[in-house]
Length: 243
Image (cartoon, rainbow, N blue to C red):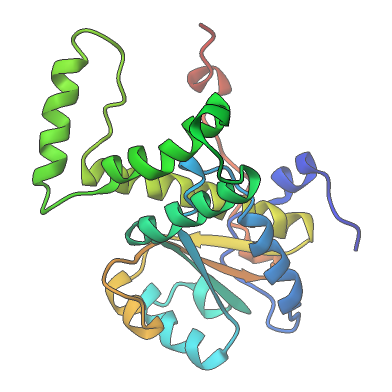
């Protein structure tokens, strides 16, 4: 089976609700697609995500009722639980800073380029300022400050904890889509499922309180009846605006 082009993969990908139980999928290929998903663009390269690749039939059977017995879950060969880890921002910021220290070995400030100074300052000071919060109080203070400063100049306004939560989910969703397109390129099928009892799924997987489930993606090989009709989209002219 030859890999598809990007355009072919986009057109091939459908949300498949029924998979063929007689056609297993290669765990190594799914893992490769998850690895490709980690190359997705994301805010500040913070990579606030984790991917739980579920190959155990026993664990899948525990999760199926938590997905309300959807056919996409019941017939799946494997599952990938895409998880947001906004709580890991200090660790991810440090990882970026450690990488920068390898790219730009420490030296006197006078010898540092503007790019080097900015990049290190970004993860040392700006990222903690944006992500730190205390029961929403610090976030509200930052929000008020941006309202005032925003009167005089353009400013980044998504500074509250709930704003950064949205940012983390957006980045993780980009990775999820990259995974599904990578799977389509391999001729494998997927279905992103938002309908689930995320609290109970977290318990099954032993996820910490700070973790949030972005979506659960079922994986397999489609049956013809697994694609519910022709793809429908509203007219392109309704969503395409030239400015």
